[in-house]
Amino acid sequence: MSDSGKDQNLEKPLYEKSLSRRDFISWIIKGGLFITFLSMLLPALEYIWPVTRRGPVGGANDVGRADDIPVGSAKKVDVSGTPLILIHTPQGFNAFSAICTHLGCLVGWDSQKQLIACPCHAGLFDTTGRVVAGPPPRPLASYPVNVVDGKIFIKL
Ligand code: FES
Image (cartoon, rainbow, N blue to C red; front, top):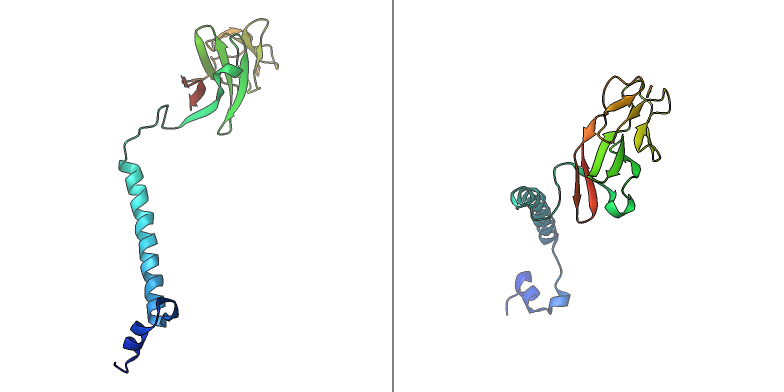
């Protein structure tokens, strides 16, 4: 049997082995390097991993379920701070900016006329966003809408 501390340490049961300051610092450094490596590896894997999820990607925003908006009705939604009006027509969903092209009032849905109405100066837009009455000089800006698995996605 040797008198060196290293050999004594080997003869002790595992629960009695003490961790030297050098070993402790070595483990901290190894742990830090491992975490640093993972923090670089995970974004790289995420970048090269094939997209297998179904549904729109690239900035499409989930604005709710299609079942919640019956045909002939509309819903106002806020997508990243942009107010939109989403209309369910017999042909599908249309999304427009809810900001009137006249002087910027927020438009709403007139369910009786089936038109988008501006309350400020009686501007009216049809379900394609075109001006049908009033002073607005341009149609409402439109945005692409996709319905995937019953969910509505709008891309700004
Ligand atoms: S602001 Fe909409 S019609 Fe004037």
